[in-house]
Image (cartoon, rainbow, N blue to C red):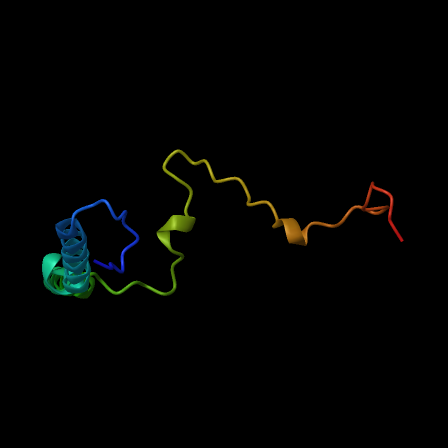
Length: 110
C-alpha cells in the first residue's frame, strides 16, 4: 500500500489508517473548539452584564454625592491631620539643565 504518510513500510496497513483518522479527529476538534468547547460567547455576555450592573451602581452613587463647591480647593491639597505637607515634586529629567562640556567619553570614529 502506498501511503501519503512517511511511515515505515514494515508497519501494518491499519496503522496508516489509524494515524490518518486520529489526525482528522484532531483537526476537527481544533475547528470546533472556539465555537462549542470553551463557550466563550456566553462567558463574555455574563461579564458584559456584570459590567453594566457595576456601571449602573457607580452612576447611582455618583448621583447621590453632593455637588462640589467650585470655590474651595479639593481636599487632597490640604495638609494631613498632623500638619505635615508633602515634599515638593522634583522636576522631570528632561526639564533639568544639561551639564556643559563633552557629553561623550569614548573616542569618535570618523
